[in-house]
Amino acid sequence: HRSKNSDQGFGFFTDDLTTQMQNRVRLENQLRQALLHREFHLVFQPRVDLKTGRVNGAEALLRWIRQDGSTVSPTEFIPILEEMGLITSVGEWALLRACHYASQWLQHGHQLCISVNLSARQLRHPKLCEIIARCLDLTGLPVELLELELTETSMLEDVEHSIDQLARLKSMGIRIAIDDFGTGYSSLAYLKRLPVDTLKIDRAFIKELSRDNTDMDIVRAVTQLAHSLNLSVTAEGVETPEQLALIKELGCNEGQGYLMAKPMPEIELLQWSRHFDISQFLPTDNN
Ligand code: C2E
Ligand code: MG
Ligand code: MG
Ligand code: MG
Image 1 (cartoon, rainbow, N blue to C red):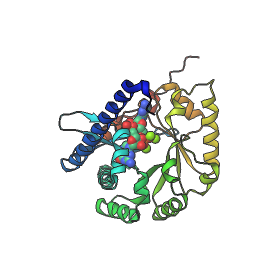
Image 2 (cartoon, rainbow, N blue to C red):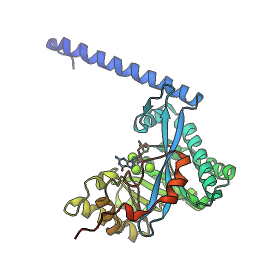
Image 3 (cartoon, protein in one colour):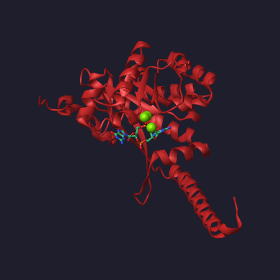
Image 4 (cartoon, protein in one colour):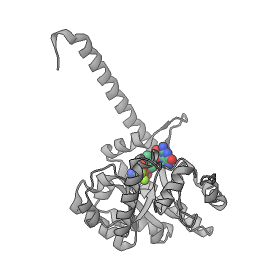
C-alpha cells in the first residue's frame, strides 16, 4: 500500500518490479530463441540398485546452455516454459532424445531404464499417450525401459484426470514415479489410487539423514509404506557414504545423487556404468 511517508520506498519498489518484468520478458524471448537455436541439451544421472549394486537406469535432465556459454537452472526456466505453453514441445523433444539414447545404450548391450520428467501441462495434454507411443515407435525403445517422473503437485492438479491418464500410460507398460515425494500435499488416500510404481523420496529428507534424527524415521516409514503398496523406493540427493549406507539399511531400492555421479553428458554414461562399483561409495568399516 502507498502511504504519504513512503514515496521513496514505493519508488524503489516499482523500479524493482519494472526490472523484474524486464528480466522476465527478456528470458521469455531468449527461451523462444533457445528453441530455434537448439540450446537445450540433456544430461543423465544414474540410478543405482542398492541390493545388487547395478546401474538400473538414468534420469534425463534438461540443460539450457546459451550461446555465450551461460546456463540457467531448470528450476528457473521450466516453470516459465510451462507458463508460456512451450513445455509441451520442449518436453516432447526431451522425451524423444531420451528414448533415442536409451535405445542406443541397449544396442550397445546396456539395458538401462530411462526416466523422463513430465510437467503438469504435459500430463494434462490429451495426446500424451499418443506422443509417447510415437517416441517409443520412432526410437525402438522397449516400453519397459521408459519411466516417467511426475511430482505429487502436478498429479494432484486434476486428480481424476491424472488417474485416468496414468492408468492409460500404465496399461501401455510404462513405469510411473512420483518425484520429490514428501514435499507436495499428497494424502495417503491418493497414494492408494494413483497407479504408480515408484516413490522418489525428495532429497530434503536425505540431506540431513543420520542415525539420530527424525529423517531416519521418515525415510523408514515411507519405505515401509511404499513396500506395503508394492511400490519401489528411490532416494534422491545422496551425497555422502553415510547417507548411502543408511538408505540401503532402511530398505530403499535405489539411490541417486552426487556421491555416485552428477548428471553427465550422454557419451560418458556407458563408460561410467562399466566402471561403477558401489562398494567404493559405501563407508569404510571402522568399528
Ligand atoms: P528432479 O526431477 O527432482 O531432479 C533432481 C534434481 O536434483 C536435478 O536438478 C539434479 O541435478 C539434482 N541432484 C541430483 N543429485 C543431487 C545431489 O546429490 N545433491 C543435490 N543438491 N542435487 C542433486 P536439476 O537438473 O537442476 O533439475 C531440477 C528440476 O528441474 C528437476 O528436479 C525437475 O523437476 C526439473 N526438470 C529437469 N529436467 C526436466 C525436464 O526435461 N522436464 C521437466 N518437466 N522438468 C525437468
Ligand atoms: Mg525427477
Ligand atoms: Mg526429484
Ligand atoms: Mg525436484
